[in-house]
Length: 169
Image 1 (tube, rainbow, N blue to C red):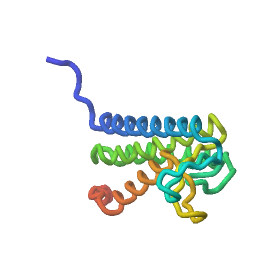
Image 2 (tube, rainbow, N blue to C red; image 1 turned 180 degrees about the vertical axis):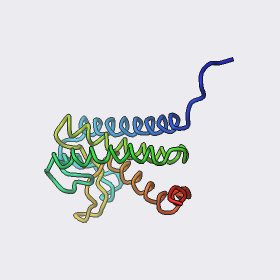
Image 3 (cartoon, helix red, strand yellow; image 1 turned 60 degrees about the horizontal axis):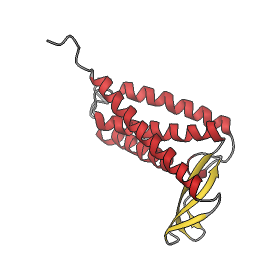
Image 4 (cartoon, rainbow, N blue to C red; image 1 turned 90 degrees about the vertical axis):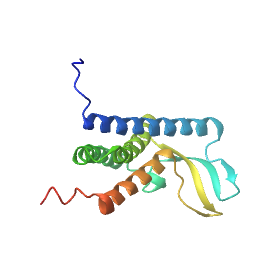
């Protein structure tokens, strides 16, 4: 007979969120390190013709090179994002591991760019998609993780959250 209590669903969900965030953070930092080590600053390497290009740039703005400068604003937004993740992880507990994978994507992306900002004072971006001068702003694994995670969270809350109305009824 074991004296250990079974793991709570909350601990399991937090573990899923943490492992997802750690995987995203690792992939983000490894890919940025590879780009820094192998592609000169502002150098472009075509991957799929001119449509997909690896382009090593330093981003002092937000995701996708938006809002250049203003590091203090980005730290404040990061703190707000982390607080929101704590809120969502508590408010949405018991709703399944997949939802916590989504929260982990947002957490990992947030931490990936935060590590760069604290360590380097800028974020390394390197994926450029477009044609000629008509290009989407450069991005990285953290940016992609943030966007996918936020869109998935919004979709879940908008279309699939069957428990949302139960709390207020």
